[in-house]
Image 1: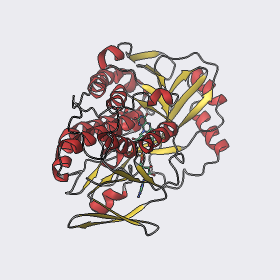
Image 2: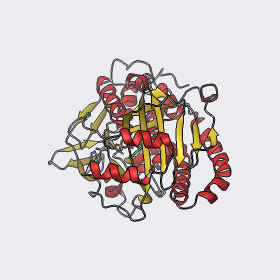
Image 3: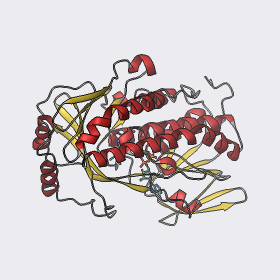
Image 4: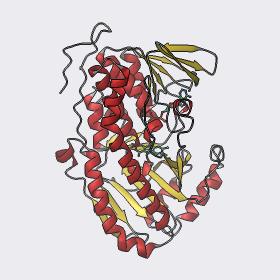
Length: 406
Ligand SMILES: Cc1cc2nc3c(=O)[nH]c(=O)nc-3n(C[C@H](O)[C@H](O)[C@H](O)COP(=O)(O)OP(=O)(O)OC[C@H]3O[C@@H](n4cnc5c(N)ncnc54)[C@H](O)[C@@H]3O)c2cc1C
């Protein structure tokens, strides 16, 4: 099957790598100019994401990109009292892996490089603008006029997916969750943390992890109206950081210490999630990653789900030769899980927004909320799927019938 992957982000690059490991052709069309030309601050890759990487021969990527382990979460109220914890000390035993904190651009770049090293072809500056189904394939046209035909097109082009819009013009658009997220990493005179430190601050939620005197921090700024797509692109960093410091000025000392040391944030992202889509595929097109099911970053699951999708889809492409059978198998395995996590993320986001307004209600109900969160986390981290691709790329591009399928 000749596969054209639109979007060389986390899902698309991982899929290209996995397909090459199976010996399939994979071409990636990426709108950006290079695989290093990516953005973002840092993200948490959960145990399920680490396990999915291992299953497709990329288990060393988190460490190779400077990631470090972070297990569990401690929750604090606005006065700095520790009010709850999600214990992560037995994550390794329970799930076979610790979650890790990674710089997003490094992860993204490394995945793309690994896919290229396996023989996947990457076209850069290739922004898809049109898809046309033909009797024996599907043709993609790019903004610069280039065109490519493939047996199947995989839409791995992120939350604002063009493949989704071209294929299902009436599909719902991502919905804004009332929070603008921003963060960075900053040298700070604070001790290392074992897990993530989460504060329900007086006026905004703040989280951080410290490793080797560097604090990886984020804040969730409540904002009722949806910012314009371009409004946050070019921030006056001095004014922006001053506003954040004011918002957290009465919050506990570690937050103030980090923000005093921070000179800038690496961006500001309004948080969206994806309403459930009726379907993720047609006979020749299928969506994966954020294009299909963008989750709120509050879940810490977006990248992990994108990697799981890639591994599971590659597995189905190995199992079946008919595109429709591949896509049906894939969505049957993935849709319910991903959409459940989207709904969970929506609840967390609503909680963060409402907490900024009422701390007594929040403190009284937090225990119940965290028990629910603990159960959901176990389900997310404990995902087991029978995917495993060959350790080495087969010598030819034919399918290896003996590929282990454990
Ligand atoms: C602020 C923030 C914090 C986050 N924190 C976490 C976290 O803690 N943990 C976690 O697991 N996840 C986190 N995420 C989410 C995570 O980054 C995404 O869920 C993940 O990157 C999804 O991968 P993807 O490949 O589907 O999409 P992306 O990584 O967005 O990749 C899509 C790619 O498609 C390309 N593209 C777009 N349109 C076109 C087109 N028309 N033609 C060709 N190419 C196109 C883009 O340039 C991009 O390279 C966070 C996201 C944000 C914004």
